[in-house]
Amino acid sequence: MVAVIIPVFQIEKYLNACIKSVVAQSYKAIRIILVDDGSFDSSAKICEDWCNIDDRIVVLHKKNGGLSSARNAGLDAVEKDAKIEYIYFLDGDDTIHPRTLEWLLLSMRMYSTPIGSTRLQYVKEGDSPKLFDSFSSNPLTIDDFWLSHPIESIVSCGKLYRKELWSAIRFPIGKLHEDEYTTYQVLFRADRIAALSAPCYYYLQRAESITGRTWSKRRLDVLDAKRNQILFFSKQGKEVLLYDVMVKYIKAMAECLAHLDGAKDPEGYAIRRLLKDELVRVNSIKKIPVGSNYAVYHVCQPWAVNKVTWPFIRFCYLLRTEDLPNIIMKLAKRCI
Image (cartoon, rainbow, N blue to C red; front, side):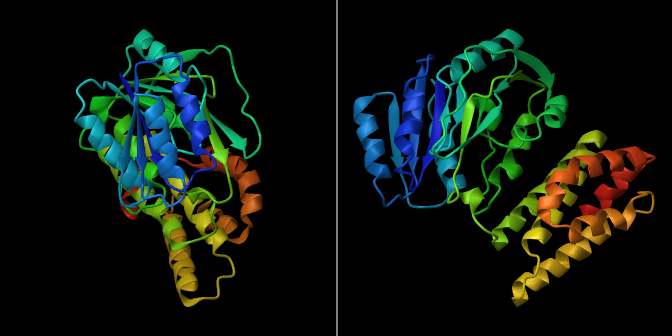
């Protein structure tokens, strides 16, 4: 049986479409766990109405604790149910293809992998997702999946997991970018993953979502999460992945700086100063030829420009860097 965990908070406008997409799955052996995280709109009532319609649906009501807390409540419920073998996360404002679970299970059993992943499809509010009638899949090592699927390797949604992979792992309470703290830990408990080509997870892009809001201090959580990943890959001795995370860490700092550009309040100015110092520190390794120019470029250029030129800059960085293993280890030691 597959448990589909759906956190719910203030999403009355989108919740019915989300639940419908799960109820309509071609694979029927599912338990739908709706975790109402203290909603004060009609979301809680919508959950109860669906529970009365479909006996596969379970509703958990709790005090508001945030997305991580809601997902954890779902995981705790799954842990107690011996019938459940697989876990799938779906955010309450997103939807999925009607054959998502069927295709994931088929691929996982075909390749004997404990995880299966589909691609994400970004859907603007008001638009309809593009549907596919077929799919292809390939088994990948987790290292290869991390490098070839930079978005899917971070997000927890859009994947089907063997239940035991989540044993003793939970999302961090009160953190933004909670997936950055968690998903890699689960992925690297496995050796391989079934990667589907079809974008079966429909990620709704809406301005008022958690990740769509304007700057706040909590956005710095991503840097803390990246430092955790650096420590993890350093201990694992995965030098290529460690380098990849280091590049993403620098990029994340540049993004934060761009958002804080022109900050006048004392706190914003102090954070900007600290980020600049960290960026210079990371880029001060003598054997990196681009050195401080790499940092200065991302500090000075608007994020709109960075977003376009980042792949080119990263490629040049790769070409110009010598003695990569030694540089990776030095970077790790300086940032941990």
